[in-house]
Length: 606
Image 1: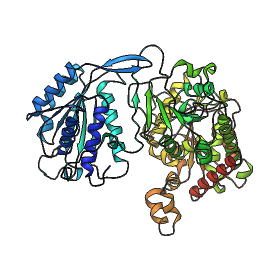
Image 2 (image 1 turned 30 degrees about the horizontal axis):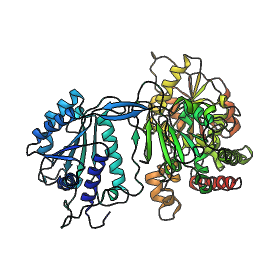
Image 3 (image 1 turned 180 degrees about the vertical axis):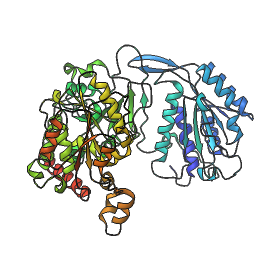
Image 4 (image 1 turned 90 degrees about the horizontal axis):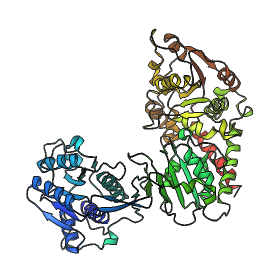
């Protein structure tokens, strides 16, 4: 794109061109100043014959005109697993800010109740002008309440790298919601577009060719609507054998079944329900740091919601990688990298059959399996009893060793609730090291919807109540801040039913997760260590034993892995807290050292 164009104009042109590409034939425009970037882009598109532009001076009339255009237009054909599905063609309506937006409300309500897909592009002042008394500025975000299927507030573009790509990804989600492609519930959507001056292209107007309207590397997501009959059969680009399966939270056993049927490596998070098996890659987030191995990946199939690993997100966002997201429900699909090629409700049955394995076998799976074994050996050595001879409180990788000890004593009938931050990431590295058979792995549950630390003790208590009816035992693995955040979850009134629950608290007196993120550089510097400790490390000095006693809960402090395993294997009566104190000071160095050793071991297998 030309650097001379203001960011507002660049964004508006991309929006209009993308609407055309997604099947919008008609756009209704009501005049205004803040919506000028869209008006210029629409006029250009109409002159080129890309769409039909309708101009009305009254936004109320504009809304109902758009409603009529949508109801009278020929339907669009979408394909669901090879089956054509008719959907109403969406119509867009553009307004400026202020009362202009409110005047759309009657038509929006009618579209809501009749299931008509209207795309409301409501221009707005930039965020810095909101609430200042600026002319024609009000709170128009969510102004239509429950009458829209989707509403999003897009910040004013400022020319940063990637912002047009992100904008088009957001617009794509809005169009999917308007047409009901995921939930078969079409209706109006609102895309609130803030624009900052200047709002017009430089004179004389110089139109862009359509191929320059999209950012380099932009990939449109094809969303396949659900339909009865066979599942979707995505067309893979390149060699289908060079595919990874990523199983995020809640993926379920289908992820593992597809990986093993097709001979694809499996990167499975602990709470995916897909861990284990011959194709599972141990310590995969460190393995992904080896470029020589990852560069061959051409396709990734995503099940569930991957949330744990930045290396996984970098892989999913790589321009050369085609991403297929399997999202069976009708809600939003996981695509934080905004790079999905297709979103499908389910794969065709053939993908779960070894008889239909596609692609050539050039050792791709074998390389990943060898990498996983090498990574597992490194992690196992770092968490062995010999490596912990000095005791947990003084040993490197002590928290990782605690996670391994907890996982090692659990069997297939056990349930483990794991807390956010470091515990779930530690478990991600060690789960399966001591389970030679995939069927020996416990069920792992985690609150990964928003990955918060709040309510974890109470969640584990609820799980323990529920699975006890099935004759199963529940344990929890949490950090000290997670425990303290929900210590009230230990409280049980005298008339409430008791529950058996073992809670292992990895106590490093603060938030060590931040040391493993970019903030760790601050912790490692002489002039930033105090600041890090105050606002990120947040040491608390709390004594967990007296806290537990106050709630009438048993507490045990263990000092070594052997004692921890012994305590975990003993019968559980009521709620018991097992505290393990580990160091926090060197967490960043430990994390980097382990990743470097894994990378070196993996490279030695290539």
